[in-house]
Length: 364
Image (cartoon, rainbow, N blue to C red; front, side, top):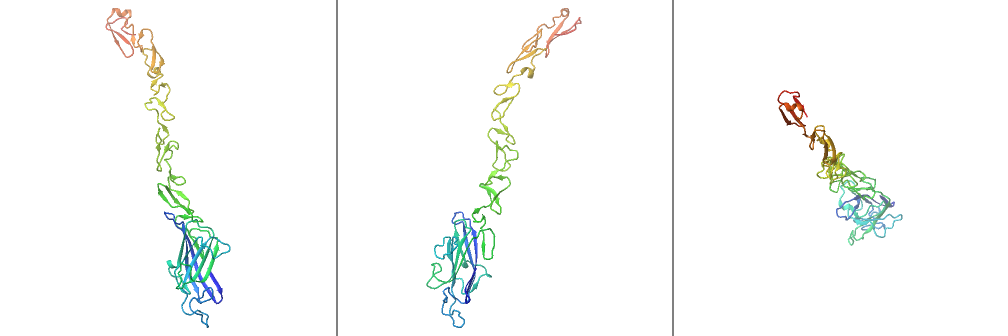
């Protein structure tokens, strides 16, 4: 920024402005406005009024005699004004430096120091436009740099529409967001984390990018094992599949039947839906006892009469629940003439002759 009042006077001072957003645990400010003085040129040692800072003017070369100006700077930052008024409150903040030089000096080649920097904290999203008033002042012994005293050497005004962008440099003004802050107003906060409240990194726009195995707006929802039932399975860490009450299996997709259910299945937890030919509350009653057990012997006919119940219709000559008893074993006429032995086998009574006869072996 270069200002010239006349051919005989040249006051030149350059500034670099840094805007940085600052995250603080207790929200005192959302950022700060930083102004750095780089150089000052006041060859004749004059004030804005044309008078000398100290002493009188040399008649020969018009330069001021005696001491040089004791130069310090004051800054006023306020809302954007199309027509700038130096008077009025500095709504965005104000600040000043101590005396940092004489008539002419440069800080370009030396390391920047805190004395030539003014920092204005703010607690709002940085606007797209602002007005900056920078005054170079001469310090007198009866004034201080903080009470607004001092004679004006020169006043510079800049009013514009600057949009903050991270890490963007321009010839006179550089606007920078601090770490973890993004956006035009440096008011979009994103700090990478991997703990209870979220698992993500941040892209260059400040958007959250979930770490592998996590999802959701805050990246705090674990992605369960592939195949895990979305309805009946849950997880607190990625790759897990923990079943809800009443469900089981590797993927929590199998219901738990009623306790004690024998020959049954379920569609919902605690059901006992009986398989074919089974009944009862626990599906432990055989409805097809004849088909399952085939209890009737000696070609008896089996009929199901109820759960776990049946009836055998025995052929002639047999009786008993399972037709296991022969009622007329060894009654053949030929057996009266011989000696015979009768015994029970698995399916019937058998009669065997001990002496030769017309019918040596009869099976009844």
